Image (cartoon, rainbow, N blue to C red):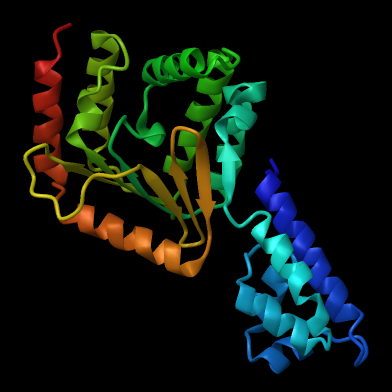
Length: 282
């Protein structure tokens, strides 16, 4: 599913290709332009096909390399129009939660390695259907969005098929309060803890739990996903933020690595989960 951001980036890419083809020096090939710029040819291809977001410096260099420096203000204006990468929840959820989940399914299906930090609820890749249903219900009530819970749950459960594909790797860290958050009935939360206990040891999952009493080098902050070192998504109350510049991706990986130092894994993670499970009064 295409987003406003993706469409805007694709349109900018089309404009860059147009400038290359219509260069005053004659029709430049992508390889020739890459040589002029000193870039890998793959970067030219990604920019033209809307698969990478250019920087202002990239746009300036491109315009000069194709002999059209006068278009720099136009290109910069196009970039500023979508560089915030904000995907408003109000707009996204206007048609319900299921379409958002289906868009996420497509995004995850293209990924081989995920790094996730969750500090408020159990990560969606590991949720039970009943737990997911409770989360969707709470969000729909709060945002007054369409209550298409069953379709949304089915879409989220389908995404979990990714976990059973060889060569995939989910690296997920969860803060202990995310396990304890009572966003669902006690029996649903208990079953969710049982699910997490069974996840420990899966070949495609590295599950780390940051205990409540663990020393932290950073405050918990917002939950986020890093997909294949190509995209970071961060959730806030008003919107979902998509960021694909290398510096921001590297920053979030450093954040993840920092939290990972405070996490426990394997049998120790199971002990924390089991402790939470015992505290639930069913």
